[in-house]
Length: 384
Image 1: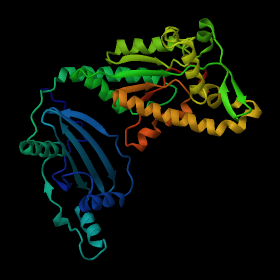
Image 2: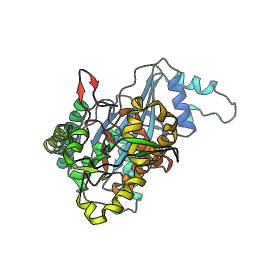
Image 3: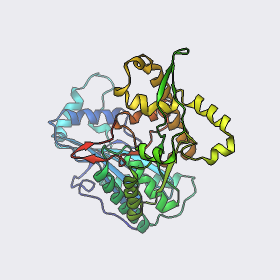
């Protein structure tokens, strides 16, 4: 099993450390250590560090000031299914720590320097020792040893794919850590992961029903060629989709690209469904659906072009569309769990709407990339 040597931050020259937590980042001793570091003059904190040591995934976050360093380490052993979080305090001057502890209120229940256990182990060694003890006491079955060569290849693929996204995305990717983990899981465990381009094409124009006071889509049979030429997400952006698919292949990320198109006008998109369901049923379904769902492009996205007489009806329509987006986000979780990345193709200003129901149910938001928007001279052409 390969070992990636930790950086200098993980291997210190300090003679000993105060152990302020062995089971997470909380508790009285940990909070006192935080306040002690905060009492000193600010110093730039180094960025979080990630490494693999003896097959253990290690994350280190350091909080630093003139008073010393608070080093928070997280480690996970995937082969023995154990993990640990520890926090160690390194001080610049022990007398300053003693004075700080002595000056704190309340007078009773104080934590003294002598109540803080110390260790001569380096931070990384202390974390590995803690995980080893936890593994010895664990009853969980050991899983197959990780192939570190595959892991390195997966991380290299993840880095290349991330570079493609950063170069071509019009907005920062969302949950990039999860995207990297999906690439890892595909390489190490063979788990499938998907990049989804979810499209609801625009249809025919809207009109107001003066009797009901509601907006409806006018029904007409757009011909096939007209639909593909007019729908900016089905045809004109195919070159952006090709670039994405090429990047998926060349980086070795292992994603499967899925383009899902809502069949909201079967006469135009997939005519066999008209033969299956029948013309009358198809028209009835379109009438019911387009009352609110497929008006999104014409009203919400292009609301600045909405005729004045229709503007009073925008709010209830917008509420229906927001509900639609929220349900779509939840449906994607039901279908793919947390194994799908959404290639967002609409306005970057409202991508969070699709996560609202997921958030209410305690489900993580969708990982998103924004590589299907055309850019020109620093501006987004189709960010309507």
